[in-house]
Image (cartoon, rainbow over all chains, first blue to last red; front, top):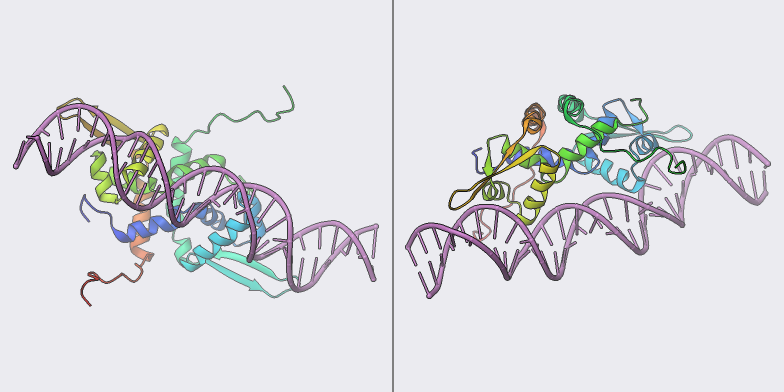
Length: 114
Length: 114
DNA sequence: TATACTTACTTACATAAAGTAACTTTATTA
DNA sequence: TAATAAAGTTACTTTATGTAAGTAAGTATA
């Protein structure tokens, strides 16, 4: 790959992990298998998008969906080998954020207290 | 940070680099300082979006814009220290893509040849 | 038994972001 | 003089995201 073009595989990998929410979902699943509502709560993502993104990631072979036919049924999402192989990427990103990223000014904790 | 929430700095770092095109732009600038049209050509991104994204990244302190008042004026984009510090993230992502990402079926090279 | 609650989604709709194409400005070359 | 180039901007269309409400299957509660 020269200066004037991008490796198409890299481009594809980038598309997979940099799609909105995908990175945070993978990062969350690196902590261990989790249920839909656990991810939903942790990331403050809507069910609509979480559902869509999990399907995308499953389709890309990054995420695995397991159904445990207990009562009530339990559905767990986890990473495949391909997904777990992203761990170093996220470790480096964590290093970068802790070294370089500052938070913006936060809004007042309680807007009712003047 | 526990299981039930995401570190807000990580979340912000993620937002910065995973915004559409941002990763590819940074990856391109890791090869060295470049002009607007060089990036435009390499990434096949429209001027409209490249302009917007470069402004975002400049605002985040990742990209630097330098004007050389030659004739004709030359404008070069490059990474700041903060931007260059992302190099390990991209190295790991490159490793991952070469190990795990396959390309989809490509369309025929020349649709005019049946 | 009726009501409410939970999980894991889906549907419908509004808004924001991305994509496309044409245009601008300043200068340069054929 | 016309055409080309760089570095954008403007106007418009399409796609993605966000929000809210709804659904089905099962559980617990009054």
